[in-house]
Image (cartoon, rainbow, N blue to C red; front, side):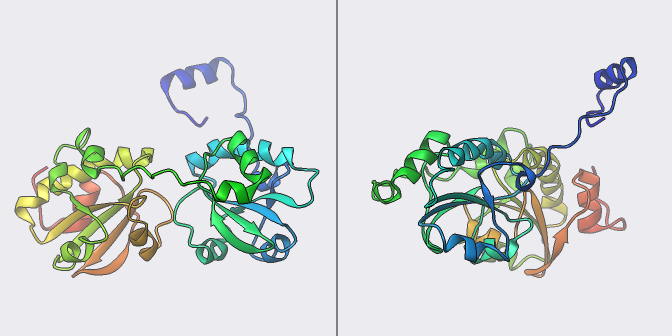
Length: 277
């Protein structure tokens, strides 16, 4: 049983049965999407006049939503030998994703005869995929819509994280000046849409508030990695949230411990240096 709620347990006891098998990986499903890897991608891309490549991660929610639409669009072109819809799993073929500077998922790029031409910036719908690949040159020459301004990090934190004002909202221009002078720093790299990030906020903000008066040389900071992709790339952030620990302004390690208040306090100040919880 994957959901251990009381209702699910009762339901299982009334009618015990095995859970459904996990969905096969996208690359194992029979579709018209060509799955590329580090050994094959160059040779395959060189053969196609028009190729769209989706760089994805299996855990990514936006990727899961886009996959069936992308797959349906690929089916529309299955009889056209010049057109290819393809995909790269960045958790397995990291070198390809690094080569093309993939910072978030899904990232979709257009290639012609193996040469990268442009990022795909249209909507992630079946209709938009089909329209783009019907005439890529025309689509790329269309005026680009003005991108929306980056989300205000304060809005992300203040709704459910009392003490958020003690979390340093870090960006590309402020990161070094805030992290550099600190004796210890724990930085949470997040995405505004990430459910696990939202769940981690309250404890992280609470600990920041607790330590603000007693341990001023310890910094808790946050980076919206969708707005500051250079920082995410610099510290090899692959998923959200990612917690990175610094000592004396220098990268020390990724933090993989618990995300509760006691876990974070124990990690940052240890059991001999108490803080009132």
